[in-house]
Length: 164
Image (cartoon, rainbow, N blue to C red; front, side, top):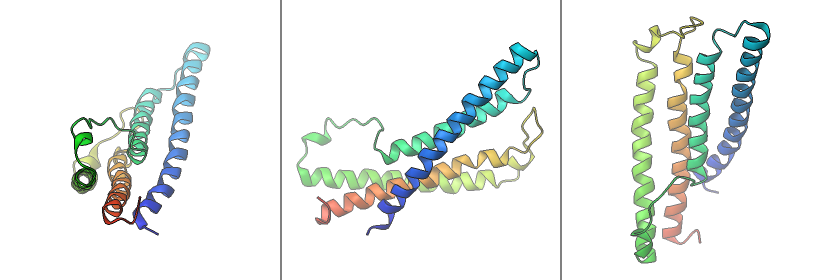
């Protein structure tokens, strides 16, 4: 059993449940806030800011899922004209480049979230620190990296003939 494809498969199930929960929280918060605004005349003060945070989290979780599902837009006009073996090598090269980029972004994201400037930022309406909410960026980079390493592992296996 190959580690990264298996890890990616388990992780995407967790991400799908997380995205469902985030959608429910986001929609529920908006509905409750609209009801509070028009029925009680007192909207939830922090609802819009929290909804924006939930939307960012939802977006990055969904992007990670789309990387796992290979649902990103790709232009393959030239690659499709290449011989099969060359296409396999191009696939390996592309996944390796994406993995490298995500590795650098993960390192930079962790440095950013743990940096001193982020420690002072607060959510305006609640006074909560923002750094826990900012962790979604390194989390996204890590989950997307696991998915990409799974794809890279599959691409290498296809070149070596271990995967059809």
